[in-house]
Length: 293
Image (cartoon, rainbow, N blue to C red; front, side, top):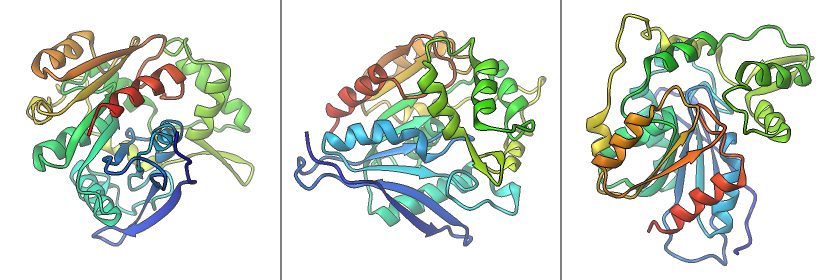
């Protein structure tokens, strides 16, 4: 196992001037040469910090790892115009972050929205994605799951302490995440909220809720099979939470049928999206990426 360095916070300016952040976990100096880097793309209202455990594991295996904050999340600046919390704008931001890091090809890990970004990158720039881990996301998203997400993104009742925040998360999501330990709940809550000036706040701009304005009971969500098919020539690890209401078992299996190099992994006792904090899931991802270039 190679000796690892601490991650470096890097900041760049997007095309419109907004400051973007990403973590750079350098490949160990004594690691194997020539391994492709790994790029981690988070979910809609998540941040680069979600990937710290898996990033450190991959770094110890000799990989360079980048974990990106989209605009309005994590350490990236909030946008004064919520209309720019847009998928295509984020695609341009990701391209700018990869260019700043000097990354032309990589293995991608995408959770939820990050998986959709991975598919779109493969469709637009086929040589960039050399392998993909899709965490609880597919080309067809379950409508009921999207409506559930719309009900909570950007909406936070007053919370007096982090202890209360942890209790709230367990109360609202505990049924779908029965396999998550108390220690993992605490860690996940601290990845979701921040304590500042005696208040518990979201770690993202609440205006992100507008990205879901088009999600309505009578509007069928767009499907992304063409983007997914652009990944069919590379190794794919598709992960599904056993209680997911976003990635159905039927779509999960159809993905495997359409992509002959796809491997499936089921995370028991977790919903959308698996937290990537438990060692079995981290090891499964690391084993898959070890087989990539």
